[in-house]
Length: 301
Image (cartoon, rainbow, N blue to C red; front, top):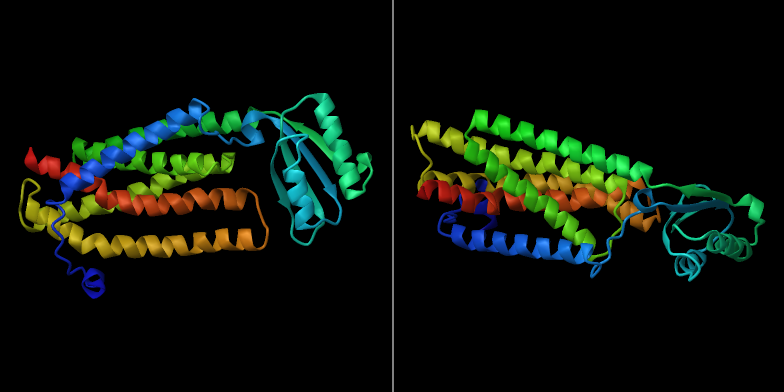
């Protein structure tokens, strides 16, 4: 089976299974929307970083252990959202949500006593939500421009219906990644937003390659319209190629996540790598199993 898959010799009837794929897609979208509604209804936590919500940072140099960091993260004085350490340095940064001046002063004293350092050696800074808002606004603007160009280009190269199918796959990948973040209560940072935009490029690349293969097959067979035979043969041919592309793309990203967690490194790099990891896997899935049911409807019509 694997050999046939690798050589593109599989004989899967994708058209026959398109109804199942379509039902799964609808169920997924309903679940994604339900998760997002629960997040904005405070049933699930929307874990935004201090770059979005505003807060305080505390940076200092001292010797520390993993138990010390755990104690600070579980402190009841302030809600500490994350910490950052640096390789070959004793410097550490704690980021906490916005609080009253008394709570901030109390937490400063707590750190001073915990790590046995003077208050003056702790660099305290209030962080406003401006940066996160600016990134979000620019990201949304870039997303609208990006999607507009995609619709125009795919319509010009293929047809308008193909652009809508590509958008459906993109929406699926974005909602899946966002839903996973909400369910696992992962922190959403500006790097996460940038990574989500990057996911669009990968998802679209895989989908357009499939469209191009379908277009080439129609030209070779001198077909004016897509039919069942062309759909099945093309997707069987490119199935392993999509899987191989996904694996080779995921391996270096997985190594970044592994190294970051194993060595205790955190920050923008791991924040960027995690949604990319999810997005690449989702993009490979959607380029096959989201596009097939919609392409099948084109055949029916």
